[in-house]
Amino acid sequence: ATMPPLLSAIATARRHGVLVKSAAAMERLGAVTRVALDKTGTLTEGAPRVAGVRPLGSGGTDEARALALAAAAEQPSEHPIARAVVAAARVRGLRVPGACAFSSTPGQGVRAVVEGRTVRVGSPAGLLSAGVSGSGEGLAEEQLRGARAVASEIEAAGQTAVAVLVDGLPVAVLALTDRLRPGAPDAVARLHRLTGAEAPPGPGTGAEPGPGTGAEPGPGTGAEPGPGTGAGPGTGAGPGTGPGPAAGAGPEAGARTGAEAEPTSEAGVTLLTGDNARAARRTAEECGITDVRAGLLPQDKAAAVRAWQDAGAKVLMVGDGVNDAPALAAAHSGVAMGRVGSDLALETADAVVVRDETGAVPTVVALSRRARRLVV
Ligand code: ADP
Ligand code: MG
Image 1 (cartoon, helix red, strand yellow):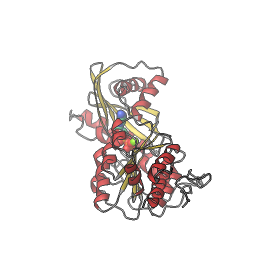
Image 2: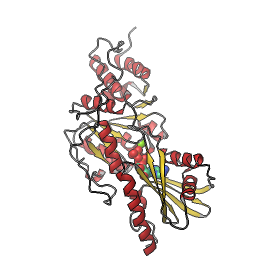
Image 3: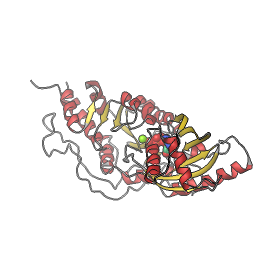
Image 4: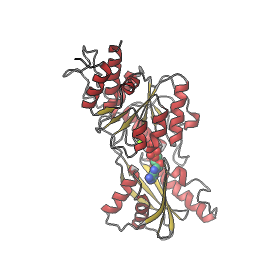
């Protein structure tokens, strides 16, 4: 007996490392007309590491002390940044104190009480804006300015800056780096083609499953990501991606926020991230994405998805974390990347990529399209 095409496609997808939840979910995947990709953990490996600790000289808090306090506050968090901070403290052999009263804000950071002091670790945009510390003193203002300058330097280098505050005063800024997933540029090029958009020059050239005869891709039909050319970064010439103002400008310099997100018809693939604009643009260029929106909160990602869908698009959202759950839920179809730290992201997605391969995303969209053509 032959399996119905959608069920057969689910079986094939599973061999490519993608678990698709149902026939209806498989069908939705092929209907998408544009794609939104998260950065951290989706295009990048999502296992950043602490590349540097910059103490700000406040309150006698040196590099080791700042890292130990940050690790204490991050200990309960599942966020990749939190894992990196804890690992960095461990590698340096630091004693990490216990913490209580832990709380976290998706897309922003964490807060906990460590040795009787309130420690906050998170995005410079959220923690270093004037007035955030609540103390309003001249000293705090000066410390905040100094911390913003250091964060800006780190971000100008394409890294992710994370601020560490003790009792409202910034004591250090951490610099984190994350590696691109090797298959990401090729996956993006294939997604551009699948959404009918012109891929910018640069990244790989992997082929989609051809118009084969059966639902099973035969050997060598190209269902596997092709080798790709591994060519250099895209041009970054698309709308909204021009270089932002020089260092010292706001954390969202050069990138639009969710609130002002306008659907861009010519772009089929957009990068949505909570990270800073410069790190976002670097990853986007490496992957051949010209439409970038940085500094987004989880609800901003969802709002961007809704704006496109209100304009008639069917959006495929690809993400990995709790910060992507609202966007995954809002999208016509959602794919969660493996090793997901968040049950929420899993629950709201149509499919889960259990292998560490971004290339599985265009493969499963192509499988769905082929199966849909066979369903009559
Ligand atoms: P992305 O959209 O790239 O997956 P997130 O939305 O998870 O990123 O995070 C956005 C930003 O929020 C991070 O770049 C970081 O500055 C901050 N952040 C979120 N969670 C944490 C955490 N546990 N520790 C430190 N910073 C965090
Ligand atoms: Mg992520």
